[in-house]
Image (cartoon, rainbow, N blue to C red):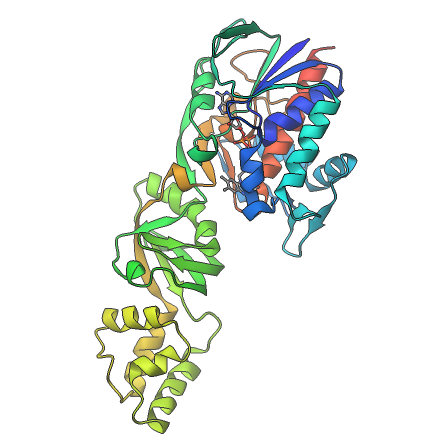
Length: 403
Ligand SMILES: Cc1cc2nc3c(=O)[nH]c(=O)nc-3n(C[C@H](O)[C@H](O)[C@H](O)COP(=O)(O)OP(=O)(O)OC[C@H]3O[C@@H](n4cnc5c(N)ncnc54)[C@H](O)[C@@H]3O)c2cc1C
């Protein structure tokens, strides 16, 4: 039986390996010059391959059945064993994030490509699939070829420079599938406030809280990077998933930053007053610069309309400064868009896929896996976990259907 896999990313490679291991004739088509571009850059080149604490509630999807099935049958332990069977050992951090022991994404791609080769997967690169006919004839550049089973594992629209595009959605639509409007997720946030630009380049350990229509949605502590357009950094990417979804629904989105997380506000206010008293010639700018980056001090004083050369700090003023440091809100107008997003929300409606096999409910013999589906996880190995898992389960489905 001949199986065509459209897309040589995380999901397509695992599906191809498993089908070929079972003796099926597998051809994988990848539009890029090489497979697995996103694997290579993932986790800042370290590849956060999966997570020990995978849970359905960490995913946004139109139907949780797909995630439930992956976590039940190919969850963290199974993924760990699977990679170990290919010789790839994992380093699991306390927070659950798992990485290859080498901490090099390249080892993950190398092992997948070696396994694909070992089991006889035929990989054709620079081969964009532009059409799939009802009888599973694929159009690939000038070539047309017929297959018995087809897997759409073409990923999402996120990160176009790495191959992200909409063709997976379009190929699925050709079989009558509904596509939940894709939106960029795990992405930097654009603010209409002028202050992030003033602080551009400053990276600080902070607590970022997302407010949607004034309601607190999620808080994340970690790096926050101020940029010319708004906010970036790992804490911001973490809360961006819900921010992005809220922006898509035209809700009001704000991010409030605590720039001094963990500090006692009264103690800090007293400290400011005491320093000013003990050093009467110190300006407020100098005093704040003892614990904050200069660009933040400048922007904060402008925002609060405080003269930077002021030398006397009373308790009322100190409390006003501390209050703002603990809750400085920035209105978010949009995300940085698909080009910069790590993943994409939305995609082929999860109701239209059989969760046991990832076979399309619209077309027998067609399978759809990975990020092209309307399933998006939070940052931390969740999206690869779903990509490997759906690729693996679809292979089981294809193998069973071939017997
Ligand atoms: C910068 C960055 C860092 C990331 N880091 C992490 C991380 O550390 N941990 C994590 O869990 N997730 C991470 N992700 C997300 C993760 O990479 C994706 O969720 C995952 O790769 C999805 O797997 P996939 O197989 O569905 O799609 P992809 O890996 O995107 O693979 C799809 C493949 O299909 C090809 N293709 C598309 N259309 C066609 C077509 N018509 N014909 C032929 N080929 C086609 C594409 O070129 C691509 O190679 C990161 C993403 C980015 C962009």
